[in-house]
Length: 365
Image (cartoon, rainbow, N blue to C red):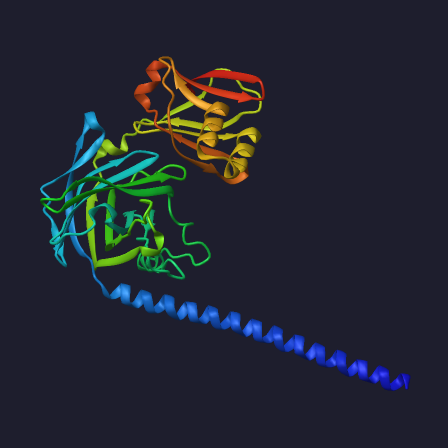
């Protein structure tokens, strides 16, 4: 009797083991299927993307010393699908690249939400940034346009598509809208991870123009469920520019603390014509950032300013433009101070518990 029971249990265990193996094989097969399906879709999208050839044009940049940017001379709109595109100005230093794009349309749209994909790179194929348009209202599994553009540039890393890019953060914003003329001036702003190279040429490729509409609910709030993506064009524009020598004569100022502050380790501080960038290690500040997700927005902002802020001798408090943690617990803070502000004397204010510290930022000769 006991032997029969043992045999029965062995059979049951064998059946369970077989079922487990079948389930594992089914799961692995499904994962392989999904991976193959993804690759097929990526290749299909790329083949469609590659078929669209960019219209190329070369512009002349004239450097404007007092404003620290280059103006594009004698460039008219390049028109495709009823949309004219041209570059107005370019500003480039060690930590920032900004480009003013000008679009002229042949019909009424929601000008405020006009957007596009872009790629900016140089003659050595240093990829400043590749960014696709977010098709609000459409759900997509992957960022197919960025993948396709990086493949087109020969810079696609499937493990991390952002690894080849020199940018740390970026954004697009409307600078001006002329509804009568149907013109939108849009500004691309890109921040460097470390330092932008001394490029001799810049290439700006624009693609996938579109916009979105969204309705408001009875409370006057935007209702995301009503968001609708509208594609305007699949055309590509490619603008080529020789970088003026003046833009490569950069004078980034390295700063240091006049007096060390306990609990605050400054890794680097740089000041340019556009911003102050501080990389620092502070357990107190990083803990505050982590706790911030549970705080009301206003309270979180006040706590951050109370813990660490930059002021000048005239009492001005400089605003943080962007920030975030980086490798090795380093926090990167970007502020709206520039080289002209150094004459007013800049200070870092740091508070831990009841202890308040203040130190001047001075040139690191």
